[in-house]
Image 1 (tube, rainbow, N blue to C red):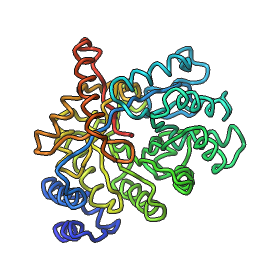
Image 2 (image 1 turned 90 degrees about the vertical axis):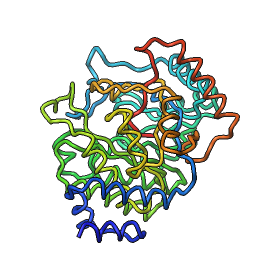
Image 3 (image 1 turned 180 degrees about the horizontal axis):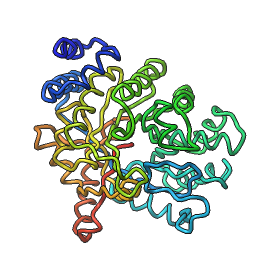
Length: 384
């Protein structure tokens, strides 16, 4: 039965939720990977694979939600809570541009204090100083939080943020898009239908976004497929998702530390099934920060066509104890070792011109030579 389903997916036919579940239950990882790679090559016959350069700027760690899986957030009264000074934040953007970055990933907690005009001014300050930089910011939980704090409609909040300079939405805060799961691992955070509606309304404004999945905690295999099905349905409706990124839950230093971490076998299986199931998604990112360089590279033959982003800074995953370092040269080598040409892209998966790419390579080599081993650039978990 599994071989029939795989042949169906490779030929470009849509597989059902029941068939997707059968694939997740299959022990034949090699067959799943081969089929996923065939689909990836059909969608991307070009001789290159891509990566991005950006920086995850967490403007605050203060959050009113309580997420058992998160080691990063701090409550509103926690002495370790912070909000970045504007000058510090702009300096981080400047450093990113100096290293050839074309985007920042701007995310924080659900801060109880700030009104929408504070976020509008934040976006305007960044765009006034760096008009060429795309702001990939404010995940659906943050956007939904803004509507509640400001008592404004979702379309109005999104339009105002877009007018202020917001370029695209990251897919953060999805975890598993099933209310049973969300209710068990988080309190005070957006539920499934509202997460999806943030994306829907953003797409209706002409915006683009990414979609994510964090798996390997309290969800069932059926609920993983339900997550994929909800994303596929919305993509059918709007076509606004640029890419999908999945990664394994990292339990260290969280309130769910007793949950055993999944290994690379389960990561590659989930990636492969995602590539087979999400037939209307063009791009899949490798989320190798949770698995390491080699598995991240293997992901490029298990359905992924993008190595994700080199990041000068990453805080959320690091708090959970998962810190894998790569230089830009190592990311590019991971691609070229598989026989592909490494190419830098933007958020829309458009290739940068060769001059910009060569500038970034040279800048990163010089910067890497100046760093100590503990200061090397971090690579994002794959939410851009």
